[in-house]
Length: 106
View: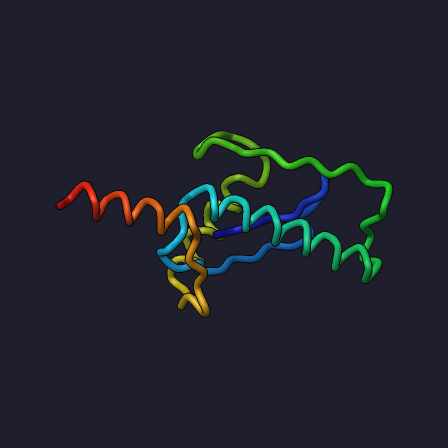
């Protein structure tokens, strides 16, 4: 997973992490949004040129679209896969899918 905070002029912060293999895509997307908002809040409380009155927008971007920051976020996500997953979560949706696959395989 990669998340990227940027203003209209510069990247503010970029991070990546390996979430493990027991999540669904939408779980990872929601975790990325949560992490990005948490990081934004931390930066705001540290008063690093991010102000309370700024508008924040969250957009899901199709892969390989020419949108500012998308290539950087994609590189972050791919680099995150190479990292070791520490305490990877398991989502309910993953468990449901696995249970259904198990039942159908019988």
